[in-house]
Each structure stands twice: as structure tokens, then as C-alpha cells.
Length: 135
Ligand SMILES: [Fe+2]
Image (cartoon, rainbow, N blue to C red; front, side, top):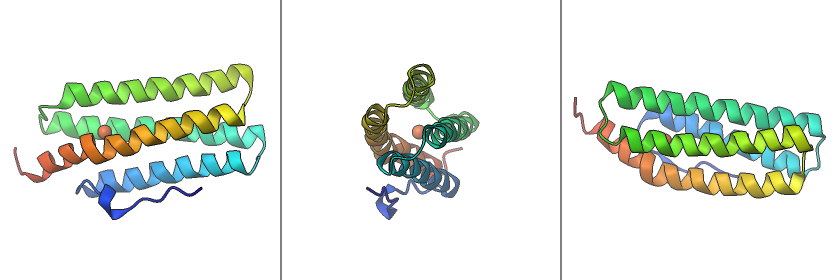
């Protein structure tokens, strides 16, 4: 597979770009581990890392939005919350029912698509606002 960060995904804010790179790398690692048929313990660990990192990253973006009084904050935060809920749901399901590689691959591909779309639209808009110099 291989999910690559590309320059066109840059939102123009260095810290956010760095976190997006890390996030994509963690997605990639989990998806590769699924495809390589790695053990449940490893897959669970990777999913837990991903879930935690998603939250760290979203918290950063939200704090920045509050600091800069970003007008799109509520809507942006709601999008993050729905993503967090979906990844939590996936993790809870694997905790309860064991790790179905097929299910994890399918769900993660969906989440990844969502994320790429979010970065290129919603986060890009945020980046433009931050760089516009609006106090
Ligand atoms: Fe975002």
C-alpha cells in the first residue's frame, strides 16, 4: 500500500503539517501490519497509538483555533469529534471481539479517506486563516 504525505497536503502551518505527516505514517504502519498479517498484540498496539495520536493532534488544532478566535471553530471541532468517535468505536470493537484484519483494513481505509479530505479542505481553510494574519 503506502500512504505518502505529499506537498499538496500542506496547510501552510509547520506544526500542523508535521503532525499530519506523523498521523499518516501511523495509519500506514497499521495498514501495513494488517496486510502483512502481523500478530494481534502488535495490531492492537498500533491502533491504540493511532487513536491516541489523533486526539493529541486534534487538541492542538483546536487550541490554536481558540487562541486565534477562529470563526469556524465549532464546526471544525464537531468534525474532529465525529472522527474520534469512529476510531474509538473501532478500537472498542477490536477489544471486545478480537482483531478482524478485514474489518480494521476496511474501517481504516474509510477513516483515512475522511482524513485526507479533511486536511485538504477543512484544515487548509484553517491554515489560510492562520496565515492571513488576522489577530
Ligand atoms: Fe482538523
